[in-house]
Image (cartoon, rainbow, N blue to C red; front, side):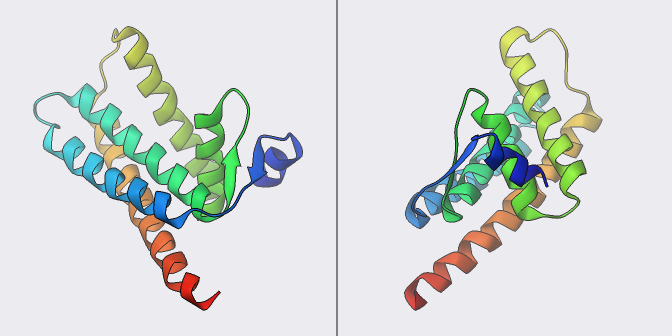
Length: 149
């Protein structure tokens, strides 16, 4: 439902799938996730931001393998909404969770006046691990299908 709404508003356009670029983004998302986990004890806020970037990279990779590209002013938000829809597991709640991560990360980058709680950090790391894992499986499946097409 959210996905059709995005298409109707012109916030998503079809492009040629780009598996090579998606694979590079996923490699970087995995590296970001490891870095975020390593920094939990040293700098929880920065760890949160790195996990948020891993989520964004995975969302962009998912869009690329599906041949989609966000359009408009709030492309990060559109990417996360698309990812929530394409992954399909609890679509509405995942989209809300992803958007909250995006907003908190952006707020911290702009003002750094509100610390990220340990609970928020752990929840974001878990969400990032889940999304990166699901998208990795999806990208890998698409790569296996390409020689057949």
